[in-house]
Each structure stands twice: as C-alpha cells, then as structure tokens.
Image (tube, rainbow over all chains, first blue to last red; front, side, top):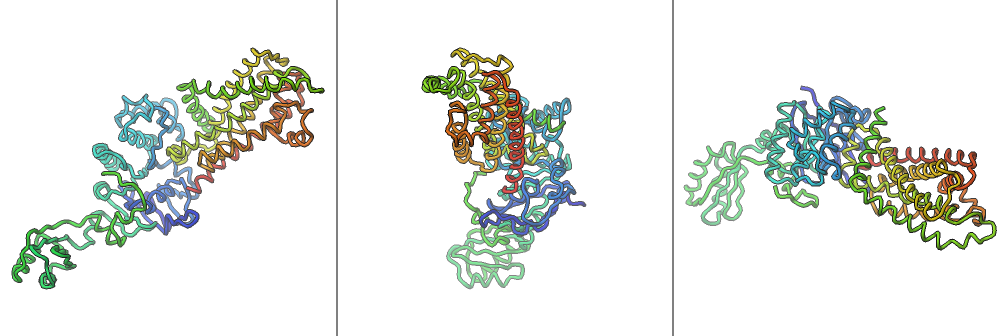
Length: 324
Length: 256
C-alpha cells in the first residue's frame, strides 16, 4: 500500500532554543486513520503545521498525497483539509458564509459551490443554524462547522489537530463516529493528534507516540500494548507482604516483572487469567492470604510510560486538563 | 481571474460586517467631525496671517479628509490580528488562496469605508460654508486621492499586524506615525507658511501628496500636472505597500 503521508527527519526549533521537532519521521498508509499521541508541547501540532504547509521545517522532508510539501506547497494545499486546534471559522459570519468563503479559496464557485455548501450543512446537521453567526454555535456545532469547512473541497488527506478537545462527551462520541465514517466510507487518509489515550485507541489503526519532538513508539494500538508482554496482575494481600511472597511468585514460570509495594503485589503474565491459579496456589503454599486479584489488559498509558520513561501526565508542559 | 474573485470575496466579508453594524460608521466619524469643528474654530485666526489665501474651512476640509483617511486606514490590520488569534488566519493560509487577495480584499474594504466617511465630512463642510470650487468632479478626485492614500496605509497596517501579531504593537506603530505625518504636511497649515525644514520634509510625505492633490482638485483652480503626479506617486506607494503586506504572510508562516 502506498503512503499518503511520509515525513523524514523533520526538525524545527523556535527561537531562542525550543526544540519542537527533533528528527521526527512517520509514514501513514492511504485510507487509514493515524493518531499522533502525546502530551501538550510534544510536537504534535508542529508536525501538523509542517505537513499541512502552514510552516516549514528547519530541515527534513515530507510528502503528502505524493506531493513534496517544500517544493510544491500550493498543490499540497489543494489535496488536503486542515482542521486546526482553534476554530477556523469567522465568528461574525454565518455558517453558510463561512463555507462559501472557504470554498472560494479552493476555487469552487457558482452553482457547484452552492450545492456543496447545502449538502455539507445538511450532512453535519447545521441546516437550521446555517444563517446564524458562527459565534452563536455550541462547541459541538462549531467543531462540526470546522470539519465541514475542511471537507468542502473533498481532500484526499485530512488533518485533525485535537478534534475533540473541549467537547462534551456526547459531542465527542458524535465526532468519533464522523471520523470513523470518513475513513471507512470515503477512504480518506486521516492524521489526527490527540492527548486522549482512549481516542487514539478507539479510532486509529496506527498510532505513534510523540515525546519531545520525536516518535518514541509506533504501531497498531494492540501491537503496542502486546509489546508490553501480556497482562498486568495485581494482588492485594491481607497484610503487608515480605520477600517470601515476592520469591514465591517469581518462581512461577508464566509470571515475570514481580514487584511488591506494601500490601500490593504486581506482576505480568502472557495470559493473566491462565496464570491466576498458579499464583494463588503459590501464595497459599507459603501461608499468605490474598484479598483480591485483578487482571487487566495493558493500556496505552503503560505503553507511554514504558517508552517516554515517565507517566503520561508528567509529560504535560503546562496546560489545562479538559475533562474527558 | 481567480485572484480577482478571491479579492472580491474577502472584500465582501468586510462589507457583511459593516452591513450588520452600520452604527459603527457613526463612531468612526465622531473624531473627524470634532477635528473639523474644533480646528475650524481654533485656527480661524490664521487666515489673518499675511500670505494666507481664502477661508479656513475651505482650506481645512481637504486636510481633515486626508487625516481621516490616515487615521481610519491605520486600524485595518486589527482584523488580521483577530483572525490570527481566532485561528481564522491559519485556516486561510492552509488553503491555496492567493495571499494577495487576503490583503487586497481588506484594503478595498478599508478604502470603501474611507470613501463613505470622507463623503460625510465633505457634506458637513458644505453645511459649514465651504465652497468647493472644483465642483463635484473635484470632490470626487479629493475622495479618490484620500482613499488611495488610505489604501497604502491599510496595506502597511496589515503587514505590520501580520508580522507583529499583537494589538499593542499595531496601536503603537499607528499612533507613532499618524500625528507626525499629519503635522509634517500642509494638512492644517498652508504650505508656503510652513517652516522651511518642514516644507522640505513634506515633499517626501505621502500625506502631503494627498493633501496637495486633493486641495488643488476640490478647492482651487485644478492644477492637473500636480494632481496627476501626486496620484502617480500615491499609486506607486499603494503597490509597494500591498507587496509588503502580501510578503508578510510568508514571513508569518515561517515563524509558526
């Protein structure tokens, strides 16, 4: 399958000395959803700005829809849709006026433009609000208008920079459905950035974890999780454990990475459920009583922790957490 | 063709804002009306200075019209700063729109506003007793010259806005140039009565070009050579400024 987006060794530094991109490379297969996951300040938005020709890297190269972003930015712009983090619509203009002006910028005119505008107002459920100023829209409507504007010229590649940040849960679920529909029915290539683990997990067929301007891990969500070698097992003991309990577990073949912290024993196993009987038997044999046992599939949080060397939220560089 | 269409669409965007809040026009007229009334009263005595010709309201009106153009055009860039803050600018720049249209459309809107504003001032001056010797044609030329100067300053304002991205910087830049440019011209005082060094400086001052051409066309027996040469200079300036503003987008993008 050909790559719809290819970036190689992108570097960008903002004066005086902020390194936004530090040799970032990625490849996105045509017709798939690719998520760039990382905390704020990791370089996700800068990547989108470079790939969407909004700005240029200090070095490195990139091709989008087969076109070089540095040597032919105007052709790239015709082939892509961009929905930025901020609302791109004019708050004083109506939804319809925003769409018309946007269409004109892509050279769509006359009857064809009017037809597409009414189609997209209908499709995004904005017909009733079409002739109201965009500043009167709710957060969800505003976001739908943003996406409608990004799609009016039927791009091959769509960039969504944090499409659901600040949306309420209902609007967020609606946005997810729309994004999935675009990829599956319209075979569009979508690159989205997010700092929500669940969003990347649910939507993306491929994802890359960005940290300090570099990609630290890439693959399918399941693949990345299974790289963590199996399930997490957590056992709560009746009283604080000792080296004996630790040793008893470590001796079991199916189990590794055993840690003990007060009354909590943690371990990993390829198949958590299958390892439980052996774990409980080993503890019983040395007379240690367990009050609860939980087995969980690895999460992207753990993937991030493993690759960035710190917990996801410690990577945040000063931003307000929006309730998800 | 596409460039013209896009310029027209950007112009319409401004016009829609105006159409929704026409009261805004009244606010922008407040200041020039005060100038006309206040300066008219304050400087009445200058007509007694030997060498001053004609009535002061006749003399003052073209000066105030040109001042109005300078002051009004200076704020054009505010729209771009709002666009930058709201994400509209990045959206526009990620589209293949011709960058020149983004500037030219807002400049055209600014020039249109100046034409309306100056028309109101001319009518007020008529009420105050100004007699426009140049007739309707002369007045149209005056308004055209003022709008042309306004177009140049509107482009400058756009360019500074895109480069600075901050309201405070634009306000500083605009207020820094407005008054000196006005006072280093024959807007409020007859050219022959200006101190020698100001007269020399004013030869290179675009505000003075507009004042000379506008005054000659509307108030005196028109000096075609003077009017044509000043319009030529102003047109060239408007082009250079538009080029600067259009180039500013590329600089802005590199810094993103």
